[in-house]
Length: 185
Image (tube, one colour):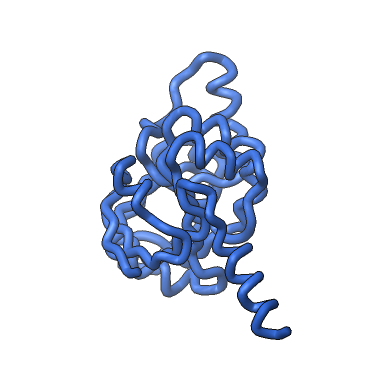
């Protein structure tokens, strides 16, 4: 089912989403990759605040290329989500509404998603130039010294993604793979 989604995500809406739903996200999302996740984890360990209110927000695992003239951002394709798996459960327990990336997630992340009613969306890998067209504004808000891995606040309009793991733990990577194997038999 195709759904229009406003970010930050409402927890009740997150629970309605099902693995396989196509969504178009409009609103504010944040970027963070490995180095930014490590810094956020260090800040939390020291009792410090995160650079943005995590509750209900979506983190897009992406580091953009430089923006072309007249554009807010360059190519903006997803990066492999599993690299953030050691940090994601803590952020989910703090209220993170969801994540956008590509690739599978660990059992610990899926358990934290179910525990907290969060979702994991996949963006299409290799389509960074196309995805960047849904980004209307980009602003570095933290860790500027990390370059492309700095945390950015993005304004998106109809950013396309697919619910891969829903708040009940249903996993499209597993169900689609099993269905494909059954077809081959």
